[in-house]
Image 1: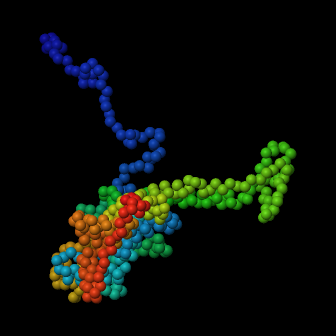
Image 2 (image 1 turned 30 degrees about the vertical axis):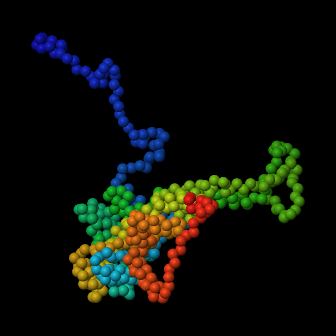
Image 3 (image 1 turned 120 degrees about the vertical axis):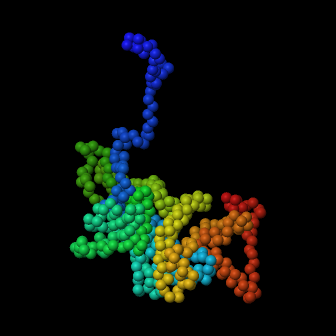
Length: 492
């Protein structure tokens, strides 16, 4: 044992990594400043939580946000204008259907029948109402049902329902596969929706409460749920203008405060001042006493007193700048430029206005694609299923295709965006077509038109013009070769 202990003591010594090389090494611990909580930021992050998407958007939270968003939209002119502008820019006069099957005759029949049906049910108006509801309520529901009053072969209609009316006020709402009126299967697909028969805000709705007939169970095949999911696992929507609600309130309070200050200053024609001490020789004047002033009259002041007019300091020079910055921040959550939100482009030039609109128009295209996939495709499939049942409405080949459950190939056209300088845009289109970097289909689609229909119409017009002996003279734009102001504007 003595030999073993000696051999162990004389063996190689284990070196501590922390003191390798004779130097003391410190343990490095990486961290994020944003994750640090201290006295300076504790109150700022007090409301941060780790709730899930559905728990954060609980029924109580969504109800509060809806009520406040609707209040601001109803009482704030800027909020109302922003929501209306957004709906008009996204939907416009309504979408137009173009079928892309190989049967040209069937395509024309379906397009014509669908356009007549859309006009009968007022689809553009309903789509604009859906987009406005998503902005101020977060979501909207459309129920597909038969409407015998329609004067069309297809009596299918869509009935819009507000988010307040989709809920489960019974113990069924406590099930794990139910989220406030929406029941899901094991894969997360909606199975049915619980729609209250009366809106919770209707007069007398609370007094007519009955557990036996308070809501209807509508299958998911008959319901269109239009909302934007901002987080994974989110099943109900919140208003698009939620981040801007405090800003809308600040904008209104500031405007009212400035107006109140200006009115207060205008209420007083002048104020009497004295430099004499309290026990001085100035004549006695009753505090806050009102003195009537006669127009174009010479007045004398009491001894030791002088009069000065109120200085109108409201609105201040920063009033317009404050409103500009607030509106710019409000519109940012909707990807809307300031001049569109404010309806004022006085501070813009051509280049900055066009650059800002590029981001806005891109968001519009994203919105239109979402509506096409979530709403219009569902409506087209339901329309075709109903149209198959109408004798002689659709061609036999199309009826067979629809019977298999497949949705025929198609695309949606929307209103085109107007250009600030049509001449420059026309030159750019001609150059792209000459270089084969674009197509007529794409250029017409940007204007919300069907290229096949437009070319056929143009062929009819040129044929009739030739028959009548009319000619079309190509007008070339005059080039300014003097290098004057017009040439400089074109270069700019």
